[in-house]
Image (cartoon, rainbow, N blue to C red; front, side):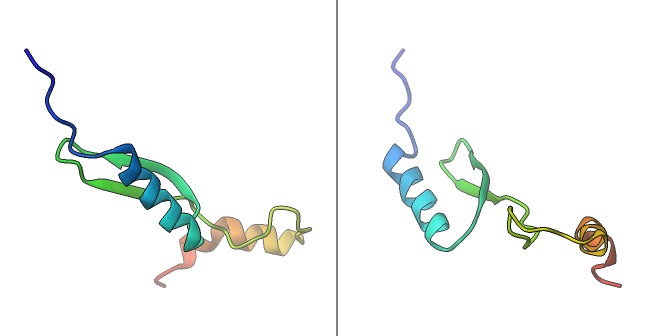
Length: 71
């Protein structure tokens, strides 16, 4: 039995990854379904640079930011 033809190519994924990176999106993972639909899942961005020094209040606010949204 012959293998089914792929619904996507490596170049398709690379194109999507480059576009997301150019837009400043940090990528957590890439999902591809059987139909060939490519989904980029963005990494959660806290908006805090990695090498910055945070006060205890800044740390608490970053940790609890999701809890206060929509209130």
